[in-house]
Image 1 (spheres, rainbow, N blue to C red):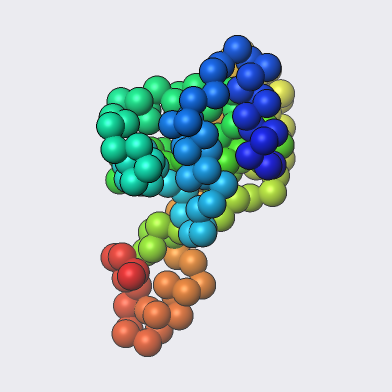
Image 2: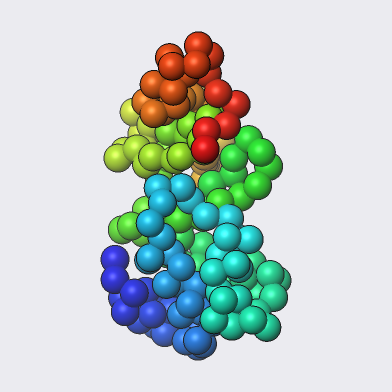
Length: 156
């Protein structure tokens, strides 16, 4: 998705296009790492250009972008939320490396394979949303562990 498409989506939903909001979008669009970004990561990027932007402003904008399904929030084991662009406006699930923190999107929803409707009917439960992340070690961390003889706590 291109930045201009994201800006238009904000406009269609009645949001002003502020320079700070555009810089937040750029932070997502220009991210070179495969790691989802924390609010602090986004804030550090935005304050380079707009030094008076508060972390609260970043969180408010992340909530707006998440509500419009422009971004997705991942809640990782360290208790810190991370955010990434949400291509196509549908939710994503991830393989998350316990070593380096890399997150790779899965191309389908595992809950669909588990017959979400059947589960909901059987348990008489109305499913509104769900989260599904798989934690393990990426190939790079496993290669490094072979070199040093154990799986890392954190790669660098």
